[in-house]
Image (cartoon, rainbow, N blue to C red):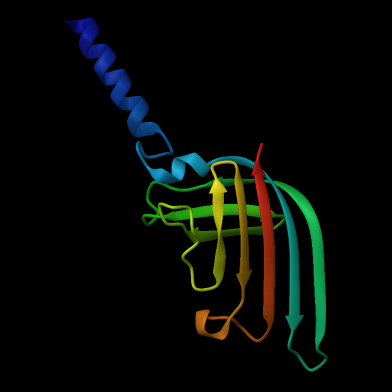
Length: 133
């Protein structure tokens, strides 16, 4: 009896202590990823300029238990880690992001700064593709 109780308590502690929620559709995307990105910023200042940065990055996809349903954190470039809303079909549902998870090992999305989504004084575009490691 004591042994069964100890096993039950140990199992509960493991489940409660996990960073992932059991049976959450986002679990299939969480982990280490390799990303390719193109970041283009058209900075609207007194001297307009367009900066473009291309590269590859070993990043990660995660979520916090306390985050709203559907939110994933995607770190796809140095100093570029943002939260995105993802539906159960793997589609990005944010105002400024479009794209989808093609499956649990492949993602493609574009994030664009837009005025109606709270964009600032410039226009930016992030094109990202990723594969799970």
